[in-house]
Amino acid sequence: MSFLDKIKQQLLGEKTASTPVKKAAPIFPHKKAIKHEFINFAGAYRIGILCFLYDHQSQKPIHEYQKKLERLGFECEVLIFTNKRECDPQVYLQSFSYEDMSKEGIPNSPRTDRFIIRRYDILMNLYFNPCPQLLYLAQNSNAKCRVSPFLDHFTSSSDVLIPVGENYEIANLIEQINKTLEIQPYVRKEV
Image (cartoon, rainbow, N blue to C red; front, top):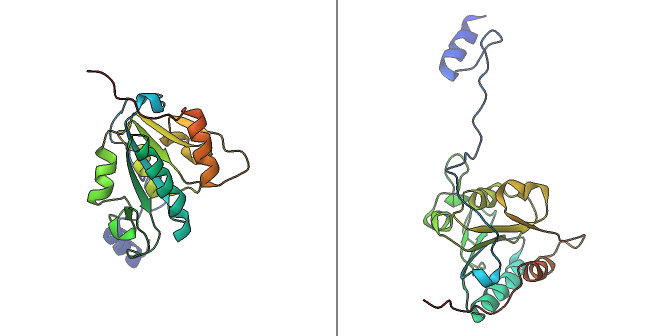
């Protein structure tokens, strides 16, 4: 090993062929064991929605769905991830972007922390592409029931997977969720 390689190894901590390589820790480690269960709309009150901003028009069906759930008596909160570097004034729903990330790429802002800590009855993932930031929020969420489309990348961060068929549209996913979880007006339980 040359003198420069030795210095590089000491400064950067690089491993040589004779040094055993340690297994890397996962990018997004699990915080704790959270008990999740199946909950339909009849057993829910607080609903959280995570979604990805594909374009400015993609937030319209999410906002309409939020308003529909609120008219039915549910408490509903939406969080959108936008992959722009700065905040976009055309995004009117609560959102976070790369500005709200730690150096490791983990969502780190009051909005994202509140979404993880809040004990939602149902947390819906209303997006299709694998987005590590949103998957991290869903995986570490304290929600009782996490609902997602039936796609491979959602299996570790969901409790209920909804089949969407070949039609990958938000409106179709919302319709399938409403059928599967039997949407109906919220009825307050007697105390």
